[in-house]
Image (cartoon, rainbow, N blue to C red):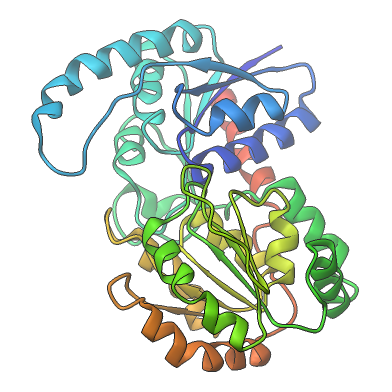
Length: 358
């Protein structure tokens, strides 16, 4: 029996691909022990136990995007996180990392312990944690082609899909139009009314929320249905007419299927799940970071399935002036989804098996 440690915490963008690989690994290695590393503040505290996997918490290494006095604590926080990670990793046969602040101490602990490392990079521009880990490993996989650094030669695996998204793709394959109508009805919306699904990533987006809340009257005047996922930490607006705000959408596969237009961030997981099930999207990339969200959406724009706008440009006035055209573009987009990422988890599992034998 082998022990596999999976490091990918914080947001759903890191946790969900790790869970997909863990489920795939259990199919072919049912006796193995799988342990997730995470922190007490991440979504992994909810998602990992819900999936019946073991979770080991480590201290969070807080790194602000701008220089501040908190940077003085980074070496001490990192050492503490590495030592805690090492308690589990020293008994492991392999570490699979998915980026984010949980991965960096896991990579260092694995390198110290002589444990092989497999890395999956979800974004089109690798983050700092995975760039660090790549210095310790040759077993690299990517969701998108990367044109520089060690990830340029990585296995192009795609991005592992959640089980509900993969299942929805397979179930919809025979009649996509019927599947989209049925999804609207399951969500409580009329099948014959255009539906806009708004989301700001797993945590929600205050900036996107403000624009949408300012546009409710316009949505209702046009007779549209709107499902607005505001994020669990944000105030829940009042429902009105066809506008339905919720803290979080559990039936994400249905939301992707049902929506005639999706408005949201362009994180790696969002783009992958949209590619599988969505129709048309207006992406508002997160304005901070290394610009990866603009790059993530590029292939969908090239395929005629999305437009991209900056957060500064995304206003209630813009939405009022362009919404009809966006919905018109949606009717021209292909009704079928794209199954390019269906086997990504299997590819990463195979790479992990290879790393363990190397």
